Image 1: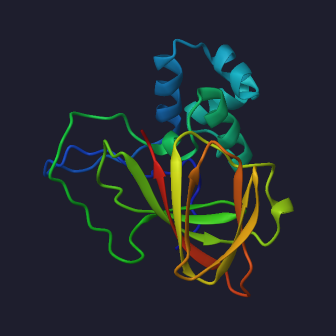
Image 2 (image 1 turned 120 degrees about the vertical axis):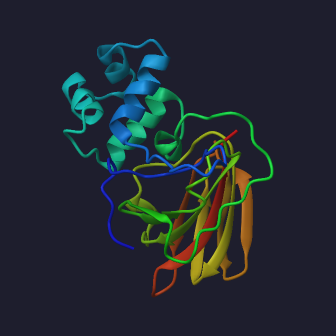
Length: 207
């Protein structure tokens, strides 16, 4: 998977199921729509996210590629998770859907600590966000504090060995075939204990 700029087009989550082309989601317009939906000015949104007004303006206009730290601040300011920044608005309720993602065909999103391959990107209005993750981090200190967001999360170790850190429990080591289900609003981080980067399947609730 190639490295992907955070502002690049990433298709995630909610599609009606009709046989029409899926429009990719651009981060800039997505952030602007989220801000306007809350009735916030650029100044108000920037203040809530802890970013400069000029920085937020450049992100919305596609003139700046935000760092992962900036993405985290944006998500916290908007009271959503980082993956939801790339989730298009939901459409009508649909049932009986299917989306197949062949190996290596998911949408890539690379951070300092993780390399995500987003799955089922053609479907919108999903209750879950599935993605395959390559764990780059080797130490807890590589993270800028705890990762936390709304919803619940499930992880399943595909290859290698990981250490799952959670805010209220002792770290636990998990090997291939092991899994964990936890409250995602509780701080959590994952590091690889393998010589090679470990890989896991992650499923995050969006509802």
